[in-house]
Length: 442
Image (cartoon, rainbow, N blue to C red; front, side, top):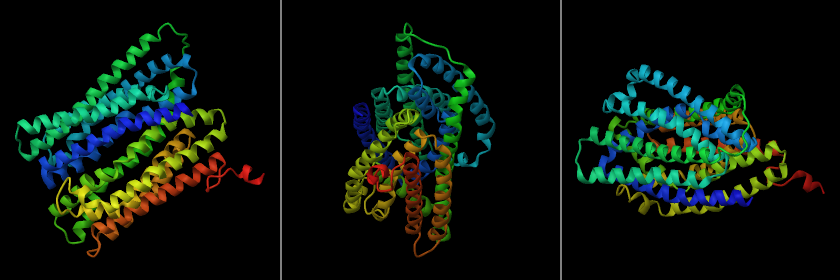
């Protein structure tokens, strides 16, 4: 348990500084790109993230789970097979991207070089996934923490330097913003690759046993494929969401430019502020997956139950104060981006969304560690379907507009959290009030 807390604290500290930099990055982008430019940036970002998800094939999750469950002597052989798998994934998605990307209309309103940036991103993400998964599974959270901080720090330095000394038209300024994003991913890749191969070299003389490549690929893909399905679903819905919101707002009587600007304030301002404390939730997720997988493989249900109680207390302990701050200090917080912005009301209305988002992340880590990835996908499908229907119909009402969108979002995340929570409690044999039924009968 000490190792768990140490890993969470280390990741949370690094993530705090990383998220602080992310907030500054979004402030810089808001001021340099303007309202419409920020809306365009936030609209293309989900599509790029979807491609990144496909390129990673959720190898960090499957490799970390594999490493946590298997004896150390199998790690070296498994990792070499994993690198081979990442190579195949890279080649496959590069070929698919080169064929399909020229025909995807989303990129038409951006600079022509944006597609080239995507081609560069694919191998970076694929191989970084292997390195990240190994460090997660072996509980080397220091390297994960530093890489997360390094990504944001390098991107911010590039943005400040370029925008400080050069002036660009909006199309080129958008391209520059995306270039800094890809460059920061490459720096992280270089750091993790160097650390990974140094680690392998240092363990060359340690006992090592070969493991069949087909066994490794089957074990990794049994987790990666359904988890990739979950992430693809989330990424597709995330990529569709800007266009769904824009269509609903236009049905409510707004112009396309106004709808795009309002989405930019929702995603670039309210989300940037509201998701800030989620660095703690993601730190929990990274440490929970191998911890839960190891405990479940040993049938240590007492540890799983005890851990769930602690995780829920930690989440509510930082989540409730955070959303109260968002609600009562919405005006000064959104004022960091734009003055007198409707994002003030957006942030206040999204308070339930953020609190339940903090809860759903560690619960998803539990589902992954328990091998319930298909349940996670099913929950996501149902909650998103209901959320999107509500977002479209309520957002299309002239009396509600963006308020209706937010009501739909809040409903979806509450439903998702409840489904995750009930499933996890049932699987590990604990009541919904987080009490062990066997203990209660004594």
